[in-house]
Structure formats: structure tokens, C-alpha cells
Image (cartoon, rainbow, N blue to C red; front, side, top):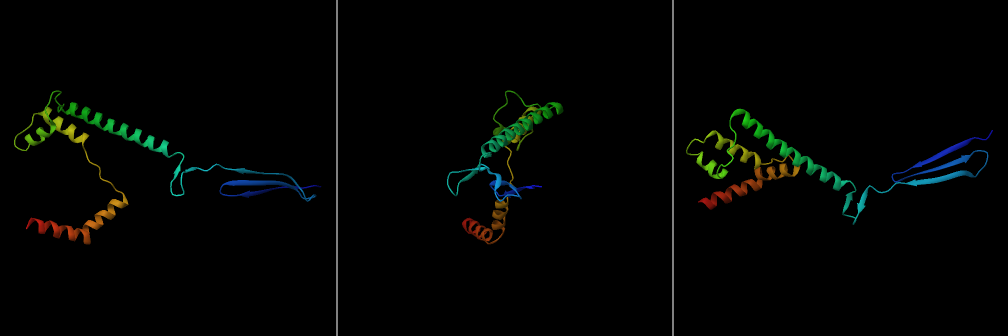
Length: 153
């Protein structure tokens, strides 16, 4: 009885295979399947994933969609509570300055909230920002505080 054995060589970029008959010393058939690289090599230091451009575009679309939903949600909430922004309101910066000394109308206050929502900041939780904060608290922070104190004196 002639037995046939399948031999596989599984590598990172390819799979090699061979069918060998144990009764004969010659392989029946053999082949290799080489996989294409998952990155584009512009340079040894500039490898980029082939799906990077799609991922970046998808992230941008999601960011735009979330921002639009946040703005629309705030406007709906302001209308529901009676703080609908005035359509012909003045500059939001002048309204923000005005509210330091006097009360704003509900529409003006709504306009200020919409403006703050549009211009809201972003606080990163990246490790590089944590390292920068640690520098501000450590030696560099001490130097900066002394420089500021000396400049004010």
C-alpha cells in the first residue's frame, strides 16, 4: 500500500507544500504560495500600511460626523429649554465680554453656548503629553517658575 504524505512549510510570508509518496523517493507535486506585503515600502524608514489612507479617511469622517451630531444635539437642547440662539445675534466674543458686567438675554446666552461648543478644546491623554506634564512639574517646571518670577520682579 502506497502512503501519500503532505508536508507543509509555514513561514511569515509564504507557505510551501509538497505531496510525497512514501513508496517512491520523488515528490508527486510541490508548490509555494507567497503572500504580498501588507505595507508599501518607500524607504526602509517609511513603511506605511496599505490600509492607512482608508483608516485615516474613516477617522476623519467619524470626527466630522460626531462634531455635527454634537452641534445639532446642543441646538435641540437649547430650543427645548428656551435658550434658542438669536438668528441675528452679535459677535459671540462681545457677548462673552458683556456677560461679565450684565445679564444676557436667553437668546444671547444660547449663542454664547453654541460658540463655546464650536470652539471647545481637546485634552489629550497621550503618553507624550503626560511626559510633558511631568516635565512641567519637575526640573523644567521649577526653572520656568523662577524665570516667570524673575521677569515679573
